[in-house]
Length: 630
Image (cartoon, helix red, strand yellow):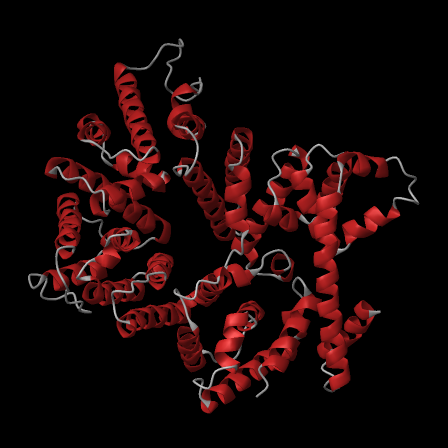
């Protein structure tokens, strides 16, 4: 009865009929609360009391007697419980059937969000095909109705799709191998089938799939927090053995490629020498990635072995290979800018040269792709600039403050002015500075230093400068701001700590206006859910909402409304905004207007509400509206 009544209420809302009565609102909220309580109790009881024998006994029932299982599979609420139980009861025939049935119904996103499917290859295969299709459709068609029903954009532009793929595809060796081979084959076949009309759109899809492949490799090479050295080494070996760095040397040579002459003999010794140099370069990069994944610093021999290719071949090949493996470039930057940076000048120069070659390769690729008339940077000049940037970061660490200036002039001035100018002009320096700043801020000793209260505002100002000039670095800026929000030191005055955190929130508000509003709100909500008041208290919540009221204007998208509504319903947020007299009446009125606008905007166009969880979306907006009606 509660479900049917709520369905009637939702229909009224979507039909833009007259407002609901107070009795209907109370009934709806009561039904939702009762349903949530019953669901929580039932889930806990089932998880505690379920046995494999009892589940398998259901499989021997008649089709009519077991009809309730299919009803649970088709119910969104019960489907989540079945997926969770299948993860803890992998040998159960009942849940194997349930998981396969859920997969056949197309609920791959629901499965990927909750469990790994490595034990059910058929389910994993269907999930992978579905996820790659969604990624391709986002690149080709954007967020169409079909895609919006699969991707929850309140968790970011790609929802949790990338994070789920990283987790599921790297859970075992064979899932990683299979996913990698599928993506490779998908890219090859797409390139073969492209025509002139579809080429631009399909190239965007290919870049999405290539990026997903890089994400999987990065996840496999990420150092494990737990496990023995052997386990860590084995995971790294699996990732590198399956990569082109290892497989390229072992592939058969095409007899028609021209490597052989008409009698089947090798053409010349120069081809053999070139292959040997390529093998040396591949092996050197394998060594670099292995050391990085094991947490070992890059040494002179590793960098020198990569540069050996330049003695007998073009340096272009080195840069092209590096940008195929972004983890290697990140590793080189971390060894130059990070807290455990290389101290030997000669080794740092070699690392700087490798990074410069990667930057030049990316410039050549951009010029070729977009037919631009730009000039590729000079290798020696770029190498010196990267080296100078890392040295400036090292010098800043011993200072109590530095100047940040939005200008590329006066590069011979103070250290802060020089670093600011380099961050503005060179994206690679901006990335290096973000690596340096995050590692510095994440260290346990930094917050206890005497210079923390004065250096922190300078670092955050530099991060803001980077976010202005380098859009692709804004996610890194977001991560850095969240690190500073998590700081707490009783030896520093409360007023100073609040000042630093308010600067963090202003930075988050700025990048929200630049396309990261969903990521910002989601990150802050995660902090609220952790319940650590020392990170973000009621005063900071009010400060953030006050800033949000100044920048949010209609029209509002459903993902934004969904994300902000969820944030506003957090207990800490409700207490900070409704239960405190420190939130001024004028701001309360503006918040009420914003909530009303959120409600109206989503009802203007019904198509905005055709995504997933239509019933829950409408209900949540109603709850927010009733909560923040001042």
